[in-house]
Length: 238
Image (cartoon, rainbow, N blue to C red):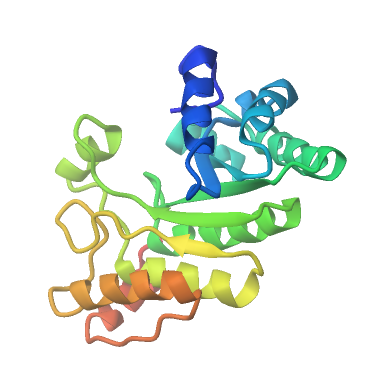
């Protein structure tokens, strides 16, 4: 959902939520999600009139900086320029009005009709493009299978598999080595039948290691015999 969309979340409800949070002395940061078209100066003015100098982070599901993938394989309905405009506005308001305002981009790992090697390259490039645009934080979100979706229909026909955990690790390790902004790797569904998977020997260990490394922003170092199978798929699956 979009917290900043007044037709989805009425302004009175939005303001009541923000007022409640602002009255909590232990709340220093408020994070919301929104589509880029609802990132408007008038909405952010109203919000900062309520929350004062608390950090307000707007997370946007960019998914990928590749317009073709986002529009045709994910069906997000907005362009990279729409996202850039939203990030630029937040930067301008931070500089001009002193708002404690940050942006975060969600990066989607392995849309439909995308190979392991393609999704690795595209996610890494998206992170680099986000850094160039001035995005403050990244969250890498590997695909999981949800009921009633196109992905599930393809998965049931054997035409789609969620990404390898190794692919996710390759992405986050490269981002942490080559991109200067903080990046988290979401572990939802890891090791399950409908989520990212390696093998029974390493799924659980890697999930715990990823969570720990999210806190330290460190490189994930691990090895398992299933890694050779992943490398073969990355090399040959296209």
